[in-house]
Amino acid sequence: MPIFLLGMGKPTIAILPGDGIGPEIMDATLGILAEVGFEAEYVTLDAGLGAVEKGLPAMPTETIERIREIGVALKSPTTTPSGGGHVSANVALRKALDLFANVRPAKTLPGLKGPFSDKNVDIIIVRENTEDLYAGIEFMAHPDVAQSIKVITRAGSARLFEYTFDMARKQKRKKVTVVHKANIMKLSDGLFLEEFYKAAKNNPDIESDDIIVDNCCMQLVTRPEKFDVLVTENLYGDIISDLCAGLVGGLGLAPGANIGKNCAVFEAVHGSAPDIAGKGIANPTALLMSAVMMLHHLGYHEIADRIRNSVLRVCADGKCLTIDLGGKATTSDYAREVVMAGK
Figure 1 (cartoon, rainbow, N blue to C red):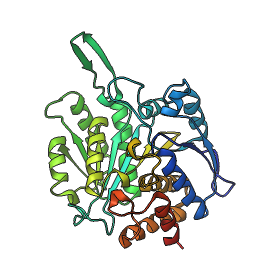
Figure 2: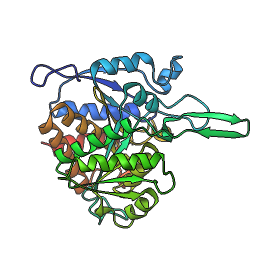
Figure 3: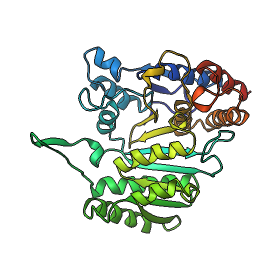
């Protein structure tokens, strides 16, 4: 748990500045938190390319152990090369700290124009974070044959569903839908589906159903308003959460949380965008809204709501948006506007 008690001093929060635009959006986010009166002790830690350049792993052991001790971290995006190169810092962190639930809200924001802006999208995706193909268990069976192993366990599935139904109840959600491919992967996805309905039976106050992953993707781009909470496996969740981010304006607006029994890491969903790094035009909204999730986690609900409402006002006004949202504002312009909207 976080090493503080609410009302008894400042919380301590681990900060991972990340790569590319990471340091810029982290500075903007922490600046906004300071301006609205949130005080914390920040501990900056190495991760990503910055760590690799120092001769360390992308997610150093020292960083993992410090986050384990602190209990809460705010993380900017880190760069993971495709194919060769270092392993994903995100995957290493989730495995080491057993951050088994990845939570990604996708909600329509006022004023933003797009092909789905007329839809009332308000979905929470809960993604299993430590198992499945995404865990990266691979080997070369033959010089011409690469194999990946998909692992689904009852224990891992059960704790994910327990968390999901509990979260849905706390957030006053009405329905939980499990996304799977049990019609083809009858053992692995079949076990996942079986455990879901065990959990659903124990939570009769919340409606439950299931949907095959390909049908789910089709339904998301035709009738996204029909979904409430989606819970799914690691790889499906990675894809679906990006799809849902696209429904509400893109990855620049998509926050995320990685939740474990004793630790929580909050991070923007998008990548490090090295092509625009240093230009001062990055959109900090995803990391800022991740910080809002962190504030709720820490019990600072009033400050969290104030920041979220400020973001909603800025988006609805439409006069100070970053380039990815169709505006001309710089990162610092946008941050100042969010602060002013809350006064």
